[in-house]
Image (tube, rainbow, N blue to C red):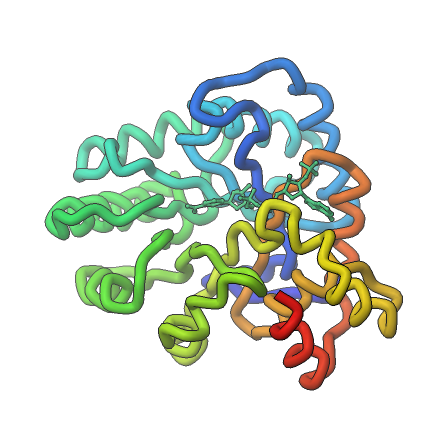
Length: 272
Ligand SMILES: NC(=O)c1ccc[n+]([C@@H]2O[C@H](COP(=O)([O-])OP(=O)(O)OC[C@H]3O[C@@H](n4cnc5c(N)ncnc54)[C@H](OP(=O)(O)O)[C@@H]3O)[C@@H](O)[C@H]2O)c1
């Protein structure tokens, strides 16, 4: 698969796989484990190499399913993102949370994110420093943040001692273009920070947009593929749609390897 982006020194596919709801939401749900693992494995077989999970998802069960899904694939070919929940912010707590996540995954974490900002910047700082030490310990490879606005991202960058913040995972879709409007996307582009776009299909609703489907027809692509392509058109953006079905993973993978024209990107903006 040739449609790649850079995170740190790694190359990842422009489309990754989200896991919110896989293995449960706030609590663990084991009812669809087999199917969920199969869907993730299917994505890996198609060449998607990035999976996004978090300790919060399914109260840790999503991470366990990711751990099952990657079995048999060369570990170094896969890029796993996980996140520490704010209740585990702080130096010791964050280290403990990362160890628990790695245990559930059965492996190290490529990119570990602070899931949501908190008001107390001291807590954020202590957590960032814990993550730097975890890089030294080899438990995680890169440090990042999630849901950080421009000001907080800059402040966090300044707080780092030895490593860079390589990514910020934020909501970004055709319908919700706040990273463009706020200057966050441009700043991250200039600074070489990856923007990981979550809820890129607006929970699936963009896949049903007739106007986007019309644009897609010129390319032999669907509305969902147009919505995702709009995002990954940016050099530093990776989108992480969640798919619970194999046909959706396949469709999402088909958002890669081509590009909307500038004119069609403009038209796509007017569709939503
Ligand atoms: N960092 C954060 O704070 C944060 C917050 C929210 C989400 N996230 C991450 O971002 C991921 C994606 O966001 P999301 O799950 O909120 O929303 P999303 O990816 O925009 O939407 C997921 C929904 O879209 C459907 N879908 C997927 N591919 C489709 C396709 N090709 N055609 C039609 N429908 C399709 C899925 O249905 P099926 O399941 O039936 O396939 C599911 O119902 C999450 O799973 C999570 O990993 C991170």
